[in-house]
Length: 128
Image (cartoon, rainbow, N blue to C red; front, side):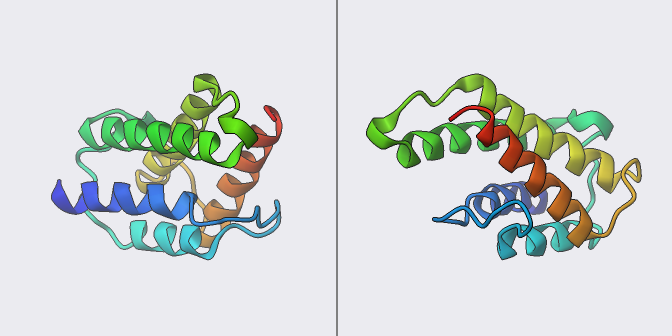
């Protein structure tokens, strides 16, 4: 579980490893690296399909908290951070990761990184 928790924290960092939005066609390099690490077969017993389990809860909580903090930091004057968008970000990443490591999503790490990135860009664009 410790290795998986570390991976969850790395995933949170990777998804926020940009200062200027790379654009919908290029996820941050750290994101693809993180998906590649996930593909290397850590024991995912704490992450059940659909994103349940202790690792799913940990990753969702950390992603949501970080998403809120980043939205506050990046918006002029701290703006509305919108918990619904932060929850959607966390649910998207956690759900895709869980289903991917359990074989429900069949893409390469680079493909998953790209698809998740495009969805994240769309989520953030929907609430400016």
